[in-house]
Image (tube, rainbow, N blue to C red):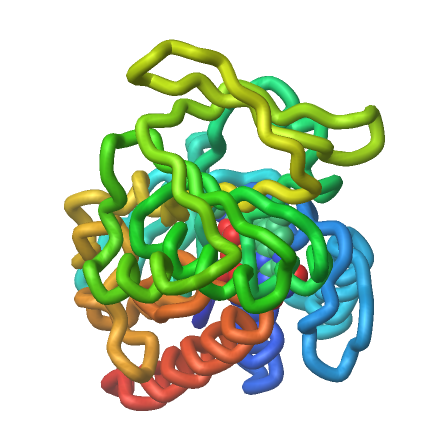
Length: 307
Ligand code: FAD
């Protein structure tokens, strides 16, 4: 069995693997796709100490760093359940195999909910963005839309209004759902427009980048088009915890509830990164959280009774 088995191979999992392996303990990583969301990212400009890099490059560097410690990496394997036994934790895989470990770090990440309209995939990273902290500065002086009037959408619109020329917030419902204090702040900004009862139907572009958004006015059924250079989709970040429902404590958003050390509600099971309740989903944060969870797992292991 493994001393530490890490489920998920994004920045959090890679960092956990390196910290665990450096303790000289038997470490494994099982990942559906090593690199995680980083594989889907183009320019990264906020990975501190690296001025600019690309996602696939960073993912390859993460993998090489993990490999250099002789960690057992099982890529292209999806976990389907976690079972806590008396002295071992078992991770069952979709393939039918099962892995046993004394401690586990869950770092299965999250995924942005998509609009699922024509043009969205085609123009991803070419004007369609999901993370204002990551990509906001790329749209300096440009016109953008934010899709979604919940807290994250309104926060994004307020944030972007300070960077870009103009922000149009688009909400499907007849009213915004964000907290009143955020809505007041939003309405106080001179370069923000709000459109409610609007269903986004298409991302338009010139073949290489976004040039507009088409939406349907849900009251008049009229189809309208706005010219802009960027679209921030803020309709939810979904944690990859479907396989853990009923196993350990999840928040109402489905995130794994952890304490300051990364401990979950099950002894010996830790979690890190976008899959957890930790706020702000970013690469540097996921890496810090992954190393913390691995150190906590080590702390747990040295306290296990001597057999
Ligand atoms: P993830 O990166 O999501 O990795 C999860 C891992 O778990 C993957 O290996 C996945 O395959 C695996 N997995 C999932 N389910 C299972 C399962 N059941 N069994 C086994 N394995 C599983 N952040 C920045 O700091 N700067 C940026 O510029 C930036 N740009 C971004 C651009 C885009 C388009 C996106 C989508 C995100 C961006 N982010 C950026 C956010 C950043 O990528 C995430 O915060 C970070 O990757 C989270 O790391 P993680 O390890 O927690 O999860």
